Image (cartoon, rainbow, N blue to C red; front, side, top):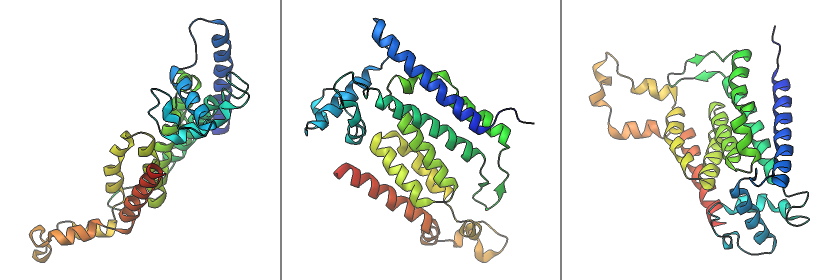
Length: 250
């Protein structure tokens, strides 16, 4: 019998993050060593420029997407240090929780291989243990509650993985384009996504057989290209490029 359930772990992870946030307010107020990450001050300064109708890049060292400054606009309400100043930390911490929930969903999925075979999903107990490594990890909690935006990128990447394993190529492409817009490194997942969205029927068609007519020598380069460019791969590529370009040109 399972003692802990996903709902219990999620509630406890939220309480932990709330406790860290409250402790951070105390340390910021009474300690010379501040709990809040210096990057969070950069984010909120950029948001203040946006609230004044100016560019967020007027803030020195702000080298992030304008979407982040727009997202943190509520931190400018009631002035610097007001009740809304920690809004961004709450958003980042909530992103951590959503990422952990998505991790659980991914681990519980039927995992299809390129040959079309289905692998059995991980058991609930095992999936919950792995998800708890993220949800209850004090390092993860500290990073987000100090005001680091990595939690946002984390949930985008895990959402991309969930969409891919759900065989939603366009949605996976959207998250890929959004993630690369936030920071360049999610681009490294693009080749893996392209390989994952293979068509089992075309993979078997290209597989070597004992028939002389289907030998690898007779499979032309153009045939391989046609087999590679299936509907999912085209949707993934077009959606990710469109999302990335639209966000960068906006």
